[in-house]
Length: 235
Image (cartoon, rainbow, N blue to C red; front, side):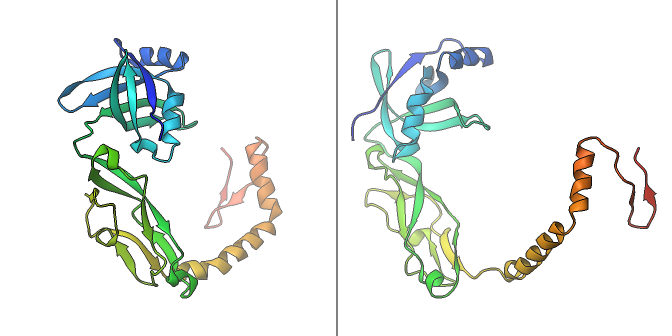
């Protein structure tokens, strides 16, 4: 894999106004942390960080942060997204030592179609979608694949049952359920005809829909009767 280098600038000022000015320049604020080191405020390109997040290794990607000609091997520790458009607003980086183990979270990927689904009519309930592991920075797997092809109805797979690379240690509770195959809930199956009937009834009452629309447009609303028969007047 090609070496990834992200340019970073020192930040001597902090605060909301400073951060807004940074973003108008096409940068976002960030902080570099490290074991027994003082945090360093930096500014980086959100496009470069977004490109790393979209890669196969995602937020667990190892890369170099070039700060004034000095490179620091880092990993994304945390990042903040704008809630509406999903744009990057802030990023924290953790400087790693290649010979020291770190804890990271890795996504779980299910592989195969369970017997309990194909032959027994069950459905897959994916409970735990990521695991916390410990390993050297260079040994972080892209994902942890769990084969569920042999999983029968009513059976489950726990953390203790999955296989990981020999240099990786799982920190997540061994008794935690990763996935199981369950029977469809009876109430969901029974509710299906009721939902269809309700939709048909709704389609047969266009006047109610029209009244709601009229009210939204500010036109007079017809009086309606309360539960006990009294008339409610528009105030």
